[in-house]
Amino acid sequence: MLWVPIDRDKPIPLTRQIYTEFRDKILRGDWAAGFKLPSTRKMAQELRISRNVAIEAYDQLFAEGYIESRQGSGYFVAAGIYLEQFARGQERSLPSAGDQPENLIDFRSGVPALEQFPRSLWGKTVQQVCHDAPLSAFGYNRPEGRAELRDVLSRYLYRTRGVQCAPEQIVMTSGATQALTLIAKVLLNRESCVLIEDPITQDIQSIFTSTGARLCPVPVDESGMNMNSLPSPLAGNRPSFAFVTPSHQFPLGTTLTIQRRIQLIQYARSVDCYIVEDDYDSEFRYESPPISSIQGLAPERVIYIGSFSKILSPGLRLGYLVLPETLVERYQQAKWLSDLHTPSLEQLALGRFIEEGHLEKYISKMKKLYKKRRQCLIEALRRTFADRVTIWGEAAGLHIVAAFDGISFTPDVLTALEATGVRVYPVEEHAIGKGRHEDKIVIGYGNVSEDGIEEGVCRMGIVLQPLTCNRPSHTAPH
Image (cartoon, rainbow, N blue to C red; front, side, top):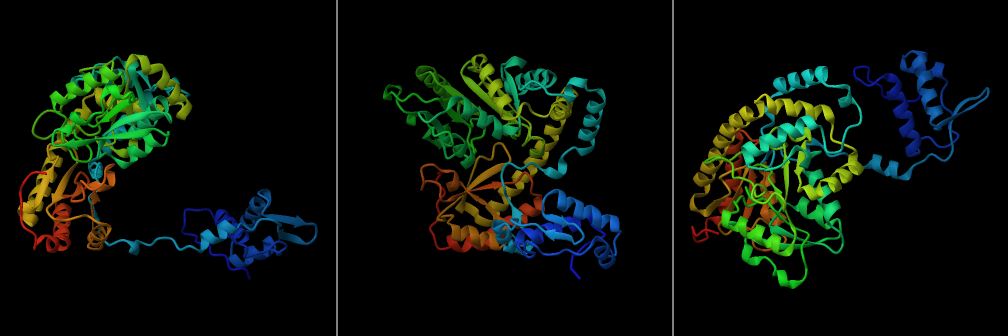
């Protein structure tokens, strides 16, 4: 008898279960070429299944070439099928739930409160769109996105962020990551130089350097990118663009002052380069309205990136580029060659969601929730670490940066924290120039409950307090 595990409670059809088991044994070499398989009648009897199920499984294996039929003799394993890599891969054990601490509290930044996503309202909106959408929405569409959404979005961005653009200047993307990738494809090559904040998200660095471009890091302080560190226009190496996150710098959380914004615009004009403004979470500003965009000051010079991943859900994969008119056609072509267009029904649903006022109501609701979580986190840190912790970037967004006096977040310290069931993210991972931010960690609070925040900081204290107890206190700003 051939032992083949089947589970009648699985949602996978029995035919597929048998096919998969036989295929895997052949690929691993458990059954060598020429191995004779049982008849469909015998297999049906032994496994207590319908003979039709056995026949269908054999038909699938035969159609794909795993087995061969010999007249009057039955089915045999075909030659030349053993796959060494498959065999090795099957031998490796899969990671188990026990590989990470139970009840891990993950302070990952940039994740909104997923449990708050307006499922019912979004579902009704999608249903209405499916019913009302024109036939064109179900076919191939324009690379820049649906006109209905771009029209709504241009008005929303002007009203909330001071972005000045016509709908024709917007290109919809599959999240901000694709927007950044398109920027790299259109503007960068091996001869290019990019002025970029330091520190800045490691993923963004990778996207730009994947083209062969060179990064020119500019340090960030409490007022954002330090304009005194910009390379001289006389150096002869004109940057393709300057990349900034001015409303809530990632990871440090600082805001680029209006004086420095004007300096950056003047610099870009003097060297004839663009400014790429990544406005990833500025809707969530807690003590004042959102900071207006740089784009609104120089629309012809700024490429503006926005996304709904932080506002609504990363799962929607909806982002956009606002482009100077001179770049629109090039980005439409790049988008077309990338993935034709962003899904149309989701675009129409989002457009209706914004137009009916649901998005701004949802943002207002979430600001109240995130403000409470932010305050809970800051109070817990100060209660646990007193004057040995300095908070950066608390004015906006879904994360803060905590700088700990006398602590360096080495791999050993991070491993010790994770062993207690808490995960944090060192700023140093995002630093281009190393050694200046070893005392800082990014702590995201958007997707962590207040109870989870309290417990997470308590666990951090278990590991970090002994590292600071014998060091002199200081409260000087970093």
